[in-house]
Amino acid sequence: MLTIITFVIILGILVFVHELGHFVVARRNGIKAEEFGFGFPPRAIGIQFLRSRDRKNPVKKWRIIWGSKDGDDSNEKKDIREARKKDFIGGTIYSLNWLPIGGFVKIKGEDGEEKKDKDSFSSKSAWIRVKVLAAGVVMNFILAWALLSLAFMIGSYEDVTGQNVSGSKILIESIEEGSPADTMGLMAGDILVRGDGADFSSVTDVQEYISKNRGKEVKLTVQRGNQTLELSGTPRESVGEGKGLLGIAGFGEVVTVRYSLFQSLWRGLQEMGYIFVEIGRVFAKLMQGERTGVEVMGPVKLAIFTGQILPLGFIFLLRFIAIFSINLGIINILPFPALDGGRILFIVIEKIKGSPVSQKVEQAFHSVGMFLLLGLMLYITLREIFTSELLDKIR
Image (tube, rainbow, N blue to C red):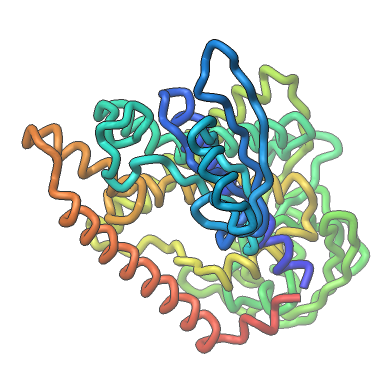
């Protein structure tokens, strides 16, 4: 249950930050945000700030809205409601919604309506509309940068393999799926402490210990976050193609290094660059029809991975959220209908042809895109549930 709750909170934060980006940039460019809410509709309660139409005698006040989608409180008497609309201009409704995951923003004119109103999204220049649409993605990237920088400030692992640095630890970087290491419960992020009571001081120590015990049971002591675990398993008797004796695909000697604020910001930026390069390589391989070695994860596997990250500690969790945020931003900027990138694509087409694409045509494309995305997500989720014992791993 803790795994599910943590995953929902992480996803909620990323979605909320994304929508906050749209909201802030829209407001700064003179576009009215009709509603900005925590969670997804239907609305439970909202608060709306009002200002008088009479600028010579400005009056500001606010009102509570209970569950009404259009902002008109059904409990408000008709004559009072009409008088309010006549004398006051309604601002953004800040709402709390019944589905407490993430957030949403409703921008005036976002679907092409109200083009004559100066505060409508559809009345703005192409550049301003692109800025508003791209703002959510930019916020996801900024959040990732902040989290990675925070990880470097608190203390992050630095690779010192082969340098004989005092106080270094042996960090597992990756585990071969289905290997003896995987079966015995070793995980990426574990620190190898000792084997059968003998302390490890270098990667060479680990390699020699495993090689010496081919086909025999080994007992490893590992540190996982604040836990010390004793795990047993049997290495393979021989090495296969791309397979090690135990199945630890990558490990190295590391030390914990803490950076100053400005150093952390720079290291966070460098780490983001590295992540972008790796994601770019994956996309390049996909375009060339090559195998990427990267598994596509749906919500179930992401939730499970969250559960595996939690015991490793706060630093690993920060890095996971940062990578998750970057991936969410990249997916949203893809030129696919219903995504932010798809909407930007239609603005680019508008500039090329010199006139807007028919609103009905654009809405049809976005509707089909949303249907395909939901279908793909449903397929991935069901495949994850029914093709493995994944649900048993969620605690």
